[in-house]
Amino acid sequence: MLKKLTAAFAILLMVAGIHSPALADNHGEPPIEELEAQFESFIFPEVENGMLTDYDSLDRLEQDMNGIMTFPLTDHYLDTYFIERDGDVVIRATEGPMLVDFDQDFTLEKVNNDHYKLTQTGHNQLRGDYTIEIDYSYEAGKWVFVDRMDIVGTESGGELPDTATSMPLMMLSGGLLMAFGAMMIFRRNRVNG
Amino acid sequence: MRKKLGFLIFLIGTSVVAWNGYTWWDQGQSVTHQAQEIKQAHPSWNEQQPLKTVQSVSSETHAVNEHATGEAVGSLDIPKLGKGYPVFWGSDEDTLTKGVGMYDSQWTVTPNQNGHVVLSGHRDTVFRNLDTLEPGDHLYVTYNNISYDYQIRETWITDQHDRSVIVSKMKPTLTLTTCYPFNYIGSAPDRYIIQADLVAADPASEI
Image 1 (cartoon, rainbow over the protein chains, first blue to last red):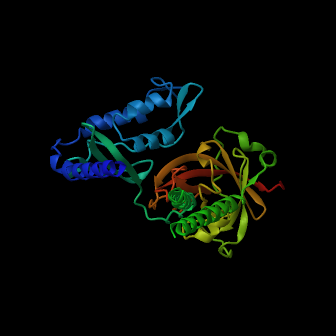
Image 2: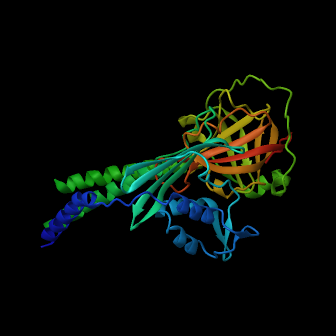
């Protein structure tokens, strides 16, 4: 019975997977200026003594930010720019992200009906040459940011050292292997029993 | 048969976890946690107001470095974190497993010369909690028995391929680089940058 249910569920998923792109509507272009204004209001909010005037918890800020971007991106911006301290949300003392300057040239490329990509290159007095790349995605009936990256500087210097380690990932993989192995041993024992 | 295979997979998984766990732990051992001693050795560590930048540290601007890759060349103390790190020459994979690496390139120098000193470290073994540092905090690099006091001016996050960070500088500047996001599992796509200016240079005191 369980096998039949699993098979039915798998078939349902396959059918949904095959048909969903075909059913995709044309949602037009994302409202880039409106989204950028909302992004600016979240990242450069009104502050008093470094504390946000409109928010007293990161949860509330997260809830509102999720209205214009996908969760991993919200998480990134909250981690990078804000701290919650004694019932207040405080802005971290770090350089903010670049914003799109709509008075300057930019390109908006349609990747598909649900995905657009904006690119702008420019020059900033403080940080020199930069490129902004923003990906918009149509999710749950509206356009949201799914990724945005500032690539600052085209000046040719040294490559940043590879300070990433794969040890936590390897440990996680090892843990999964252990769980899988234990499951095989356990299942065999149960069949024997 | 299935039980044997399951046992083998379990054993391989255990080995992978044990080996990587040990390597992770072992690499973190290069960091010393002597908060009290490190703070005492650098009495000015808590001066948060911006101090005047030292524009020139030496008349020697083109000294030849004769360090071998992986050689211990000095140390880095961060009193705010209560941590001290050994610094090794180079920033290749092997050197970074020992501790903090001093970048060797045409754009960078050692602390006793005018220019850009770059130190790099793994975020999950040596440079943990680096994101808690803020402009105004002090970083102390000991090199050739001189303690160089740098004050953080700016921190930012950039793409791993950004070639505008490790560039030549005229005044004595220290840059720390590590991976970002700090809690990312896998090869982190960004880099966390901390840039500081030299504010003092004194004979090093023993910790």
